[in-house]
Length: 149
Image 1 (cartoon, rainbow, N blue to C red):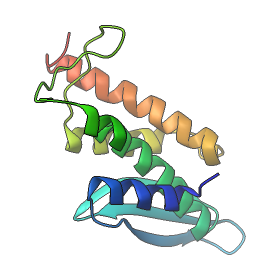
Image 2: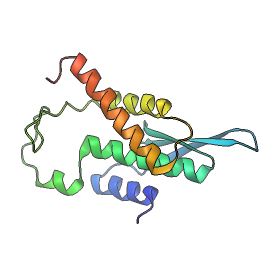
Image 3: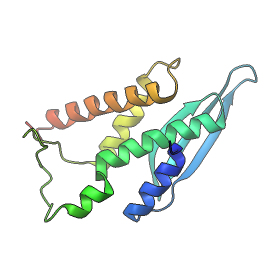
Image 4: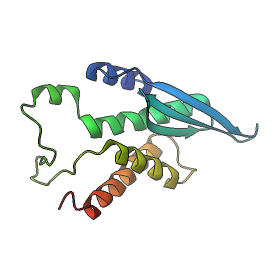
């Protein structure tokens, strides 16, 4: 299985995005260290991860960033096959209306979701929870704004 940082680098390269960089800071004490890592692409913080080591925090941040970017841009192969695609209110395969993509709102939804996931949750399980919760937050805000039915 590809390491999340490598997968994120490859994804960004396929889309022609700048290479991700990691802004990682350590907090806490020696007995219970906590590292927080932001994935930054260009000038935008795409995701934030945390862990008990720098490596874990960056891995979690890369997983979350990859999920956020895939939600925003889709799979590179699928993008290449699309034609015309200016419709921001596209429908998924089941006919359900997809919300418009508002990057700043998506990033903020991911940040809030990350803060709400229990700190004891780690790794893929934490990433899945953050992505699920961020989707719910994002969808709710879009619906409140009347941008999707």
